Image 1: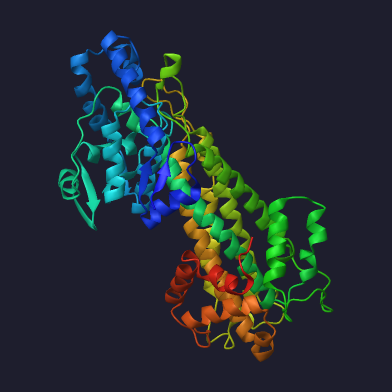
Image 2: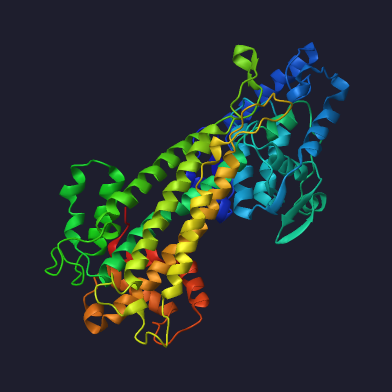
Amino acid sequence: MAIVINGQSLTVEEVIRVARGCEQAEISEESWAAVKKARDYVDKKLEEGAIIYGLTTGFGKFSDTLISKEEAADMQRNLIVSHTCAMGDMLPREVVRAVILLRCNALARGNSGIRPQTLKTLLGMLNKGVHPQIPEKGSLGASGDLAPLSHMVLTLIGEGEAEYQGRIMPSREAMERAGLQPVRLAAKEGLALINGTQVMTAIGINVLWDAMRLAKTADIAAAMTAEALNGIKKAYDPKVHLVRGHRGQQDTAANLLTLLDGSRNARDVNPNKVQDPYSLRCVPQIHGASRDAIKYVYDAVTREINAVTDNPLIFPDEDEVISGGNFHGQPMALAFDFLKMAISELADVSERRSERLINPQLSEGLAPFLTRHGGVCSGFMIAQYAAASMVSENKIYAHPACVDSIPSSGNQEDHVSMGTTAARTAAMILDNAEKVLGIELYAASQGIWLRGERGLRGLAPATRSVYEHIRKNVEPVDEDVIMHYELKKFDAMVKNNEIADAAEHVTGPLR
């Protein structure tokens, strides 16, 4: 069954289903009626010769230049081709699909003045798998994602390139193969299609979805380290977290107790130590804060995917066309900068746990650098280097993009959000964090193996399930191996959510 969109009720989960699962989407009948009503109003105003930004005037600094009715169609095409200034690598397919879906959802609200047949063609591109080639760089996130969205519209008008059935080809060919007719844009349509935050939101929503899954994997990695380092579970007692009151902290503590239920390695009390270091003892507080930040982003994104973000906005019932600023990306820029920090911290504390596993002064009696043949073998020494390198790199990416602003369009657009940069750097941080958590899981599983039969028998059912899944893919390290190949396997397991799946096979859904 297709996902029905109406500009008001789309969910994050539905966006992911369309973006990654290639599910179909359709627009509700009520929305089609609203779209037609708005377009009829635009046509009426054009016939009356009303002076309206973007309909009968130029754009940006050219807003005081009047455009005749005869020039309107040429102006729309010129708007698109002149704005296709994006650069860099192409956005991945799941992001492009999310971009198109979000744009269709915004247009379906009936405040943009687009023609129904134009929207129908854009929706057809999504459902038939015509994916425009959209470069990732070039948006200030101010008057929306003008440059990258223009590349989306290039395919709609039969220009540029698109991916169709796994091949890159001229857009016109892709459209013909899919049984679609390129559109000749009418007045207002170019601006309706490219004024908006859909690119930053599409990138960010994919990062958000993976960050939500990564939060579970981070809890599991911490539990595996607690097994290897004979952690103290009492710090996760719900009474401790209830008196502070943060939901993410309580959820993380509950996950840790669930994951470690039945463990004989991690115990409520350890006669050999009073308490664990912060990287283990404060996992609920650290991971929990990231969870709360991710929830904030989830709520902000949920609002944005159902927002009308182009300009000017059409209000037929009120007989108004209002030039506003909903295209400004600041709400998403702040959210995605927050997301960057939340993900970075999951990696930051993970690297510290890896250090405790690998460092003989901190590892509770484990073999130095997790090798039985120290000196001849280096074991996991440089794996920690790699984790430290990526954590340090994340500190650069985590600098908030939204605190920068470069005026544009002759200083008409004198404050910009840099929201798309925030989303893109969030994706870079996510990739590093997945790799860093993979290194911790590798080190923790090695530490458990080095504990021998006692350590293996002492595993909780959930951590045993994770350990056994790991061992299906990666052997313990006795003699030194080419670590790169093994680390890639862990990266893939984290990215594919295999670690969480292995744990939840025993525990049921974690929080």
